[in-house]
Image (cartoon, rainbow, N blue to C red; front, side, top):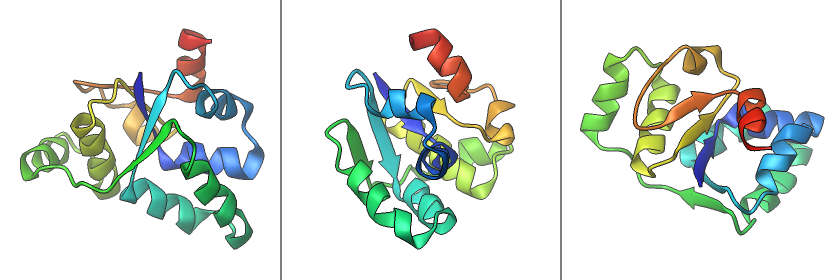
Length: 130
């Protein structure tokens, strides 16, 4: 199943060894897609000494880094729905890679109901799949 972890999920995992995110990341049933926006946000919000751990994590066989940008139409769709700039890029990315879920703790994301993917927090996702 294709999923996208918002940058805050990687940050919690790296800073706090979040066990729920650990279960998601290390479950080979999930294909985790990451874009440049997520990478930039993570690197901006973690200490320098955790950067190599993050880069190592991106090398896992079930994590896929994609640098393609979403189309102008998809960007406009999420902008018109009231998403913030960085969130527009992440939501557009979810649609572009055909993710089934975006996992985030971002309250702005969690308020949104969109298609073709579902936005959930890690607790809700883990209840559903573990």
